[in-house]
Image 1: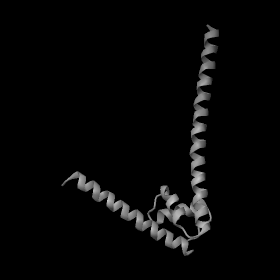
Image 2: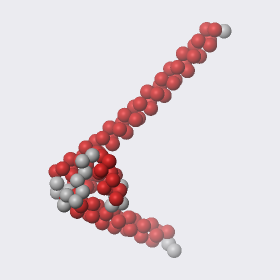
Image 3: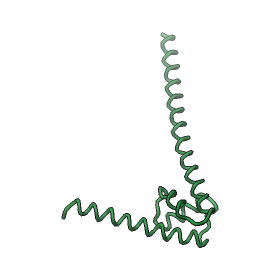
Image 4: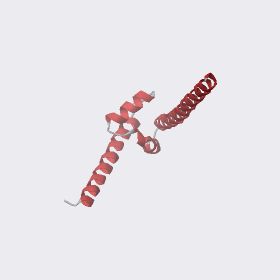
Length: 112
């Protein structure tokens, strides 16, 4: 078995699955069989059809309904902002811990 052939087959299978799954999801969303009103419902719909949330942009682009496009865009923005905030908060926590450690070292130095 050639690993290059296996890789190509795997890529083709993934592409087919994603393409068909996104089509099926869009059919349900655009026919109003599924009407996501919040992040949890949108995520649940994506996962029910085996579509990863990294395809929010593709679904937003291909949907014929403004509501679906807006839900996807809002979800993309929310996820982006969440990641930015998490990164900034973790940096603040690390800086705070370093500041406390420095203060503690200074106290110990003066106590000697």
